[in-house]
Image (cartoon, helix red, strand yellow):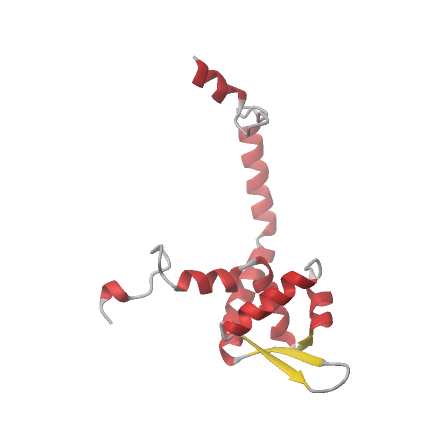
Length: 144
């Protein structure tokens, strides 16, 4: 493989961008993290994650299954019994995003402090946005 053909997520057309988006999406991260603990049935996983709609969870699981991160085990019984678990590839990815999630949790105070400083610094300078989303100062400058 030549250097120009190496994956580079900064390139607009790099296929790794799509996979990265799937793994790091809001629900993708939470599904992978939950499945690190054990396998789950759909309803159990939905309760474990909290706040995800059935539609979004189903879509996320299907995407992660398609990418080879999640294994879907459907047992032919009545009522249907489907378990979701991580593949070896999924476990590797889940460990990476779990590390990031833990880091975020450990740094929340710093993040909230930075937000507060930012808001205080910009509060005096920023004007309330107009209905079209632009500050009054922007509208005045455009008409002068």
